[in-house]
Image (cartoon, rainbow over all chains, first blue to last red; front, side, top):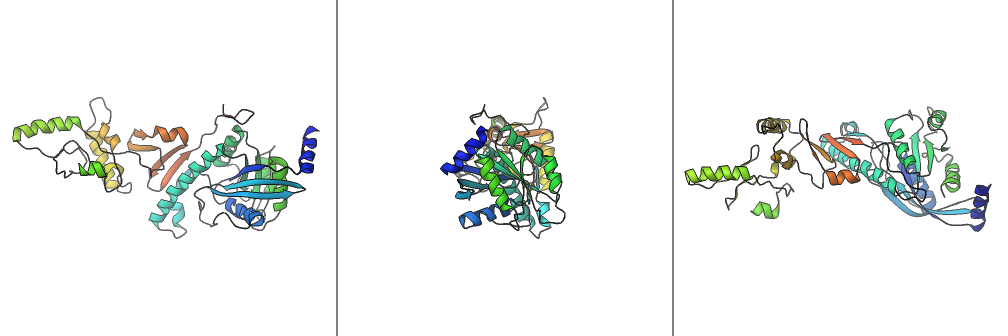
Length: 206
Length: 153
C-alpha cells in the first residue's frame, strides 16, 4: 500500500533521479548491443562497438545524462556498459576469427583487465541489468557468481533475457534459473520489448 | 650505473643487489687483482663502466612467457640454486617483479613458488596468468555486505 502511494507520488510530482545503471553479463550476450540501442534512442549516439568476436568491450563504456521518460515519470541515468565477465580468458578463442596470435594475446590481456574493472565497478553502480543469452544454458559459473556478488551488495537488479528473436531462445529456462527476480525478455538486436524494459527500469530501479 | 638511473630498455626498473655474490667476487678479485662484473645465476652479464658488482639485469625480469627454453633453464637454475632449507633464492622473486602492464596479481616463479602482488590483490579479484594470453580470474562468490544505507560493513 505504502509502496503504491510512493510510486503514485513520484509519478505525480515527476520527480527526477540520477541512477548509475550497469549492464553485466558474460561475453557476447548482447550488452553493448542493448546499451547502443538505449543510447541511440534516448541520447542520440551509441556507446561502443559490437562484434561477433568475444570481449569486444574491454573497458567500461559510460554514457551519462540519459533521460528516460515513461508513464509520466522521468529518470536521469548514467549507463555503464561493462566488459563481459569470464573466469578464463584464452587468446586461442580469438584466433578462429582471423586475429593474429600477437593481437589475440594483447586482446586477452585487455579483456582480463576489463573483467577486473567490471568486478570493481560493482561497488559503484546503483542498479544492474544482468543480461543472459536466452539461447544458452543460464546455469553457468559466471552467472551464478555474478548474481551472488550483486545480491551480497543488495544492488537492485533486473534479469534481462536477450536474443528472444532467435528460434532457439528459451525464455522460460532463464526465468526458472533465477526465480524471484524482476525479469524482462528483450531482443536488443531488433528492439523487441524495449519499452517493457524501460518500464521495468523506471518502476523497479528508480 | 646508467641502467640503474635510466631503467632497463625493456621498461623494468627493478634491480637486485646480491651482497653474497659481491663478497664472493671481492674475495676472488683480491686474489686475482681484478674487479669484474658480478653476474647472478641465470642472468646476462651487465656491462657497467663503473664496474659495480652484484647488480642483476632486469632484462630477465619479465622473460618471454612463450620462450619455453628460457623458462626451462630458469627452472633448472632455481632448483640448483635452492638453499639448503629448500626455499627459492630471493633473486628468483626479483626476476618476477610486477609491472604496471601486468594484469595478473599472482606470478608463477617456478613450480610451487609464487610471487604475489598484495596491493593489487587487496583491490582486485585473483588473476593468474597460465601462459602468454591465457588468464584465469577468480571472482569471489561472496563479498562484504552493505548495510541498509548502502555503506559497506
